[in-house]
Structure formats: C-alpha cells, structure tokens
Image 1 (cartoon, rainbow, N blue to C red):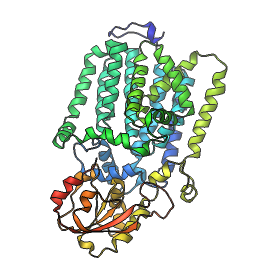
Image 2 (image 1 turned 90 degrees about the vertical axis):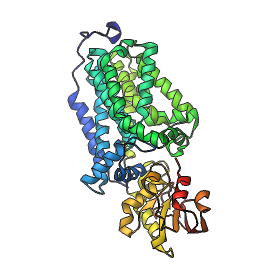
Image 3 (image 1 turned 30 degrees about the horizontal axis):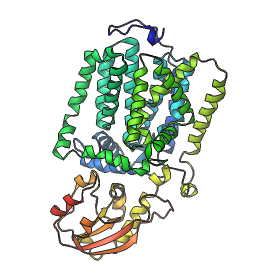
Length: 498
C-alpha cells in the first residue's frame, strides 16, 4: 500500500509495516565510516572554526553573535574531558555523521524501501563529499544536517503511522537543532509553508506538533534575550554568509550555488536526488518535501549563500530515490547507479587526509589542507615577531581573523605568548584589551579606526606557516602599532566587525 492510497485523516491508520531494517549492512557502512573518520581525525590539524568553538567554550553564554551555544558547549565539554585532544573534540561530529548514515537508511525503509534500497541510501550518504568532508569536523553544519535529517525521518514516519508522539519528538529535536544553528528555523518555516500549499494539511492540525514547537520556542528564549540585549547581531550573519568566498567552490551567483550543491551531493547523490525529487513530486503525501527543497534552493541561491545550505534535505530525497528504485526495472539502473556510487566513494577515499602534509601542501584541489594545516607553525612565527617588540609587557596581540587569534589561545602558551584579541564575530565580546596596553602587534591589515588611534604604525613582518600551505592566514602583514592616544573603552566599540 502506498502513501497516496491511504486516508489523509488525522486519525491513526493501519498501514503496511515497512520492510525489515537492513541492520547488518547499514550498521556496517556506518561503522566503517566511523572507523575511517576516527583514524583520520587527527591528521593535519584543527579546522579554524573548531579553534573558535574551543575558545568560545571558555566564554559560555546563552548565545553568541554568530550562532547558538551548543557547539561551544560541546567543545568545552570535550576539551574538559581531554584538553588539547583533536580526536576527542571531534567525537560528537563523527557520531553525528555515523548517525546520519543510519537515518538515511531508515528514511528509505519508512518509504517502503527494500534492504537494497536502504543500503543504497546509506551508501549515498557516504558518497557525499559534503557529509564525509565535513563529517570529521565539529562544525555547526555537521550537527545541523543530521538533526534536520532526523526531523524529516520523524515526519515521514508520522505520515505512515499517524502516531502523534512522533510530532512531539519532532519539536524536541528541532529544539536541540535550534541550539546548534538557527538554520533549522528557515527549514521548518519552509516545510510548514509547503504543507499549507500542497498538504497533507492534517499534519498541521495535530496538537502535539504545536506543543513541540512551543517547547522549541521556550528553549530559544534565553538566546533571543541575549540577541536583543546585544543589538541582534545574528541578523547580520546573512551578509557574512553572502560574502564568505571560502564556502563557495564555484564562486557566487545562482550558477555557482547549484554547482556547489551538486559537488557537495556527489555524482551518485545527484542522480539519486534527482530521481528522489521526481518520486516525491508524484506522491501527494511527500510532495511538500520536494517543494520545500526547491524553495530553499532558490532562496539560498538568491541570497548568494553556499550550496551546502540545502544539504539538510539531501537524506530524505536520497531515500526517496533509493526506495523508488525498487519499482524500476530498467536495465540501466545497476549499470549507472552502482558505478556512480563506487566512483563517488572512491573519490572520498582518495581525498582522505592520509598522505603526508608535504605531499599535498601545494594541492589546490584539496579543501582540508588549507583549512586545517599550519596552526602551530603560524603561532610559532607570531611568537618570533612578538619577541622583537620593544616593550612586550605593554603590547597586546590582535588579529583581523578570529581563527588566528583562537589558534594563539591554543598554542600560544608553548611560546609564552599572552592571550590574543580580535574584534571579529564573537571574539569582540570575549575580552577588551587592558588600558595598560599602549602598543599592538596586529596580524593583518589594521583597520583605519585602529591605526588612527596610534601615533606610529610599522610593518614588522609577514605571517608564515613554513609549510608552503597557501591559505587565508599565510603571508598576512604583521604591524606594530605604538603610541596609543585613545582609551580602549572608546576604541573597542568602534572596531567590532561581523
């Protein structure tokens, strides 16, 4: 019995039980991915945002200007368990990624997919460069994608069972997701709008759904209060995402967005997602997922955000495509999809961070090397510059990027460096330089507001990671600003950058 053949009433209905869960092969895929991610978790170094989350975890609050508090809280907990351990820091992300594999397979099962379909859906998750590339890093997107996929799983299961407890659970999961990334608000809003347009509207009439939504809203109150008290900095993050060139492989604009989305989806993933879209648009109960995906893609493309922001709906569409293959008898299917999966997963294996850094330092096609390599070396280079300043006791270190300032927090103690300051994003809120600081060693190009507050400005060096890794933190100018004539209490508010 298909979903479209059943009643749309809100009463519980008896539907055919889904096929057995392909426990062994799916768990084997999830386990193999977990082993690979754990084995490669300590290669090269921290992702810049991980350093930031680690530092933000030392300044926990109800919110941050750029994000909710869950990731800094996780980073603080992991760093408390094993200080300085990259492996332990990344455990929550790796577990989320492994859970994503299982959720994808369960989605295929709920949609009537056979054991083969469930394995294909799980393999599509592993074949996605986005899921695996970011899956080892403790990032908001890693957690957000898995939680969004879990929300879709609960909704799909409700469509089959009409068990309203699932809707309450949906609200609880959304509440957790809201503490990780505000993006879930956009996803849910678009899903609700799609339900209103194309149904099944019975879902929106169920009281447990709105109770769950109310719980999620209540959990967000402390975050909203913090944002209101600090001028709503989160509202400016759209401009930050629009200008984040490092997130856009093919550049900005709608074409770049869709090319990025295809790249992050993977060769097999694109094929399966396209077929999945066809399947959900043909199913009256599932059509709202296809409409929501289309609306989100157009919206994010128009806003010039990165293509990976639609990744939260990849799993349900992969699952729909995989389940739909059970009803396709064309001979081309095994000759196209399985080779595409093999090629996609093979590409993942080739790009694993297993080769020596010296072999891949100049490889411009790799994303992980410039994003993670060279932090200890950069901090050591900054320490060499700091030792040359005339009066270290009255000189503070500032960075134009939060990542480099956070790296100094992690590795600076090895070189007797003081804490570093930055006016960028959350770091502006963490601390203000003391009034005793009459000089600044600035990493990057000093903004005019800072330069004009000092009587002397001299370039004293350039940052060098010593590895030949070309990234945003390599070859930055290092300036010594001295002779401050403006109080930090007046200067610091003028420097804040979102």
